[in-house]
Image (spheres, rainbow over the protein chains, first blue to last red):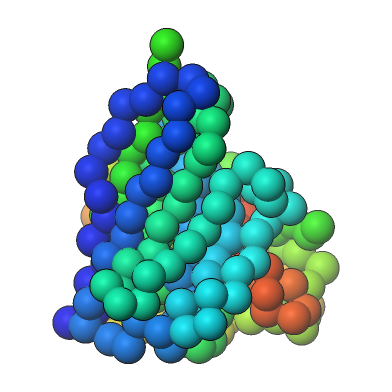
Amino acid sequence: EVQLVQSGAEVKKPGESLKISCKSSGYSFPSHWIGWVRQLPGKGLEWMGKIYPGNSDTRYSPSFQGQVTISADKSISTAYLQWSSLKTSDTAMYYCARQHADYSFDYWGQGTLVTVSS
Amino acid sequence: SYELTQPPSVSVSPGQTARISCSGDTLPKQYAYWYQQKPGQAPVLVIYKDTERPSGIPERFSGSSSGTTVTLTINGVQAEDEADYYCQSTDNSGAYHVFGGGTKLTVL
């Protein structure tokens, strides 16, 4: 059974750093892109970027390029999304999702709520 | 960059047919995908490659494509179908993804 399990909710202050995780199981982790999706409170889904764990090839949406870093550790089947300096506007739910070969996102994590507040 | 445009809301009575559209310039060349998201839950893929339905998705969900517009159709809408629906596609290379703004389906 394919599963993506994300790390728990975070509460941070502006300027702090953060790394959230997405652990995959039930399939060959190196062989599927993992994407990250942001959902601001009460708003729609926004694609942030993705990584191919097999060779760490990474693509970012222009809206998020330079704002976040996506990485992966094949040895533990885990993808990461990190910020070096959080802003209050980063408060959102963040989802990871497995990209199928047909470019759909066929399996999703449960989401990680990030709250940034002073 | 490119965009996918959806109507913000659609309302139907139980048993009727709901149609949710999604338009974008790349859709004649790239497949579209549809996701259902209920409050407090992660999105769920309901249609892939314009018209295909994943296993476990009810037959009342179908997709179609015509030119720059794709459409999600839900026949015989049930109360449990009330949710937000998002279309998604890629750029011509498949490297970059985009979601539509989402459509709130209300079952009256």
